[in-house]
Image (cartoon, helix red, strand yellow):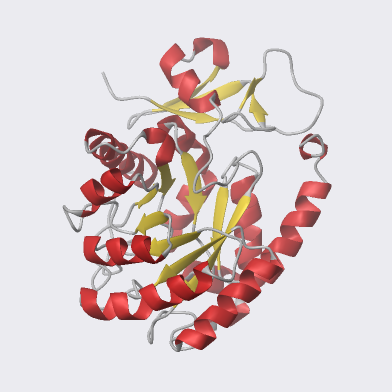
Length: 338
C-alpha cells in the first residue's frame, strides 16, 4: 500500500463549520484533508483521518526559544558574511552587525538568526574557525543589548557550540543535522531547540538540475527521517522547527509546489519555519532582478505561508514584513481574541 500524507485544507474566519478542528492548536481550522499518495489524491473529512495523524495536525505547538507560537513570529536574518546572495558584506564588521541586529529587533523581529557561512547557490564551505570568528563576537555583543533570543545558522557543531556559549539559544541547520554528526548530540546535550531544513545537495552544486519524483512528498520524507533521527539523539519533537528549504536545490516550479502544499508539513507535528525571503524565484515572478528589490514579493509569499498555518517567517526585510503582518492580523478576526 502506498504511503499516505495528510494535507489540512486550511480555512479561516470566526464562522467555523460544524466539526471543524484547530490547526496546530491555533486560530486556523479545517474540516477536510487531502490524502496524498504517490499515485493519486482524495479529499476526506477529518472523521476519516487516523487518530495519531489528526493529533499531530491539531496539537498546539510548544514554545520555541521562549517564543509562544500561538501567533506568527518573525526571524530576522543577520548575515555576517562577505558573500551572502542578498546582503553579503553589509554587516561583516561586528559593529555594523550589532547595529543591524538591534534595529531589526526594534522593528519587530522576534528572534535573530546569525550566520557566518553563505549557503547561496555556488557557495564554498567556510572553515569553522572563520565562521566562529564572524558570529560568536556578534552574538555575545547582542546578548547584552537586545531583549530577543538568537539563533545560529550553521551546519557545524564547533560553530554551534561557540554560539550557544556566546548567548544563542537555537541552532538552525540548512543541512537538516546531516552534515556534521556531532551537531545533533550537541544540541541534545545543551537542550537547544533546532530547525531542521531540507536541501538537495551541497550549496556549491544544489542548483545544478535538481530533480525530484514528487518534490512535496520527497521533502516530507526527508524531514520525517531527520526528525526521527533527532528524537533518537535526544531532541524532543516539541523542540524542533522544520523548514521545507525554499530555494535550496529547487527550481521555480518546485518552490511553488512546496508553497501551495506547505500545510502538509503540519503532519510532522512540528512548528513550521518558512524561509523564502528575497529568493530568486520571487525575483523571476515579481520581475525584480536585484535581491534588495524583492521585499514586496517576499511579504506576499510569507503571508501566503501564514494562511496555511506557518508559525515563523525568516526574513531580511523586517520593517516591511512586520508592518504587513500587523495589518494582516488586524484584518483577521480569529486573531483578535489572542
